[in-house]
Amino acid sequence: MALTTQPKFRTVAALLEEMITAREWAAGHKLPSVRAIAQKYDVALATAARALEVLHGKGLIRPNERSGAYRVADPAASAAPPDHWAACLRVTPGPWQEASLAVTAAGFRELAQAPGVRLDFDTVPTDLALPAAALRQKVRQARERGVGGLFFLPSRLNETLLAEDERLLAACRECGLPVVLIERNLRGEHRPLEWDLVCPDDLDGGFRCAMHLLENGRTRLAFVRGAPSSSHNDQLAGFLLAHFQARQRDLLPDGHPFPPTLDYAEGSPSKEAYRALCDRILAEGIDGVVCYHDRAVIGLAIELLARGRRVPDDVAFTGFDDQHIGQAFAIGVTTYAYPGREIAARAAPVMRQRIKDPAAPPVKVLVPSRLIVRESSGGATAGRAPGD
Image (cartoon, rainbow, N blue to C red; front, side, top):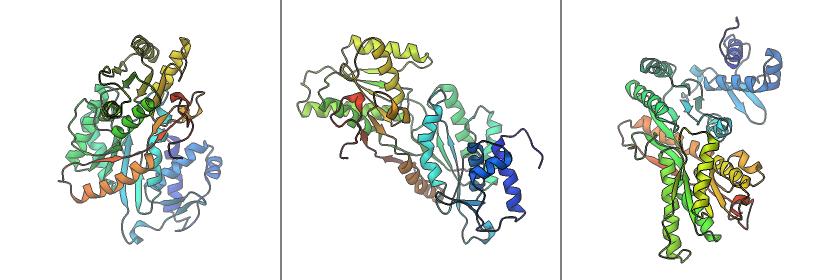
């Protein structure tokens, strides 16, 4: 096969598929290891691994975490066709993109290895800056390849990307491709839910984060919110609910001032956004902050430290998603973990039900998680999850 300008992993996948199609590897045959494939085709290990993912997405191989990948029987010989789905995860671009994608995609990559499931991460591209007609063609091609549903994480970053999301979903509706949203609804303050949604229980997360700070003696909290989205609104709702309960438990007096919401300035450089937020935190005497994401905790903590303030002594923080850098940061980030595996596991039956009953009203499935306490909040159990 002649080399093309397509990505290297697709070229390697095509070469391997030729060997399978030519029946050089029979059903049950163990494929070469990722390292052997990388050496044979002179590519990186990650490229070889992604090539195998493409073959798995097509139902040609079956991966085994302990022993490698195996050629499966021809689809015609199978008693029942597998569930064939696609995933399109629009993680916010920027320096944190790869880390965020790893957390979000982990559960779906695990789902892709489940028996009777084919999950393709490349059929619907994450770059949707295409005309509506081109997106419709992409969706039609996915349907022609047997894709029966799409797991979709919409972008929350700006109105331009929202318009792209809306064009894709319109194409899915026109072509009859079922969609299950992941993590959040489409961008917007009070966006009606038109598609099934499987997401973290962000209200529970906001409640737990705020109550943790209040129970540890913080009395003047603020919530830092990102782009307008259902997930951030639910976090804020839980944050406010914690203040209501704190009054019931006499952790706060009845006349305590209403906690402020600080919006991360969209479109501003990170340094300017964090400086403006810190100005508000210091001016209003805030001693505890719940942030919509771990990266906001780290940005604010660095800015406060640069101003001679102490974290968590002067200001304590909690975040969301349990990003890897929050575990390695010198001041570990207390966080409400992202339940990636559980979300993928719950999304699969939601998709099957949607395919079975396409006219049913949309459902929202909340997946609870846990608060992981580390140094940023000054908790007595830093480094352990409550109950561990």
